[in-house]
Length: 206
Image 1 (cartoon, rainbow, N blue to C red):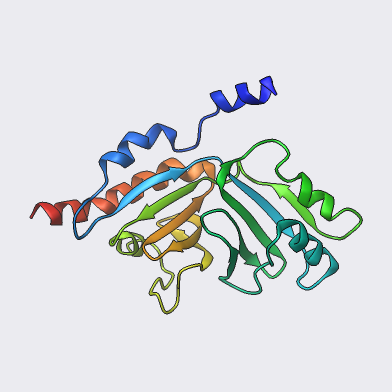
Image 2 (tube, rainbow, N blue to C red; image 1 turned 135 degrees about the vertical axis):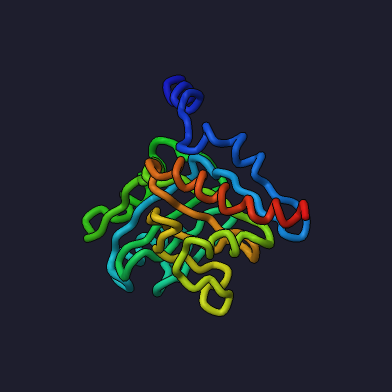
């Protein structure tokens, strides 16, 4: 236990060194937009064929159904939810608590003797939260996906790119988007988003 607490106290998230930059970039007013990192959220990768015994075992232990198709998500975006990545691949995310050793144990146990996979991926990606009336406008400067609400409603999640960075993009609220870059791309993407936000600050000054 002491070793776990010590590890938590010294670990650093991929965008922690840019916290002050993100805070200073916040735009207020009618064109408001903000950016922050949601660090150390639980992320567990799952592989299971839809409607299989493996999928049902995972759904039982998670307490939520696996998404049925492209772009879909299930569960509670403010807590534990599941994002669809491919026909037999999913990402469990829990933003209500910090990742710790053993988070994937229960889902791994659920698959014992069954085909499938459960793997803790919490260190693989970080989560950047872009929020506010101008959040979509910022993303559309470098995302080729159609982000209009008719094509990308609240709850949808897709694999795409923002600028040159491959990401998982989740519309977690009416005016909130969670952007999942690989940890090694977090620095670049934060700076790209901050630069893209500057336009709206200038508009507010004018």
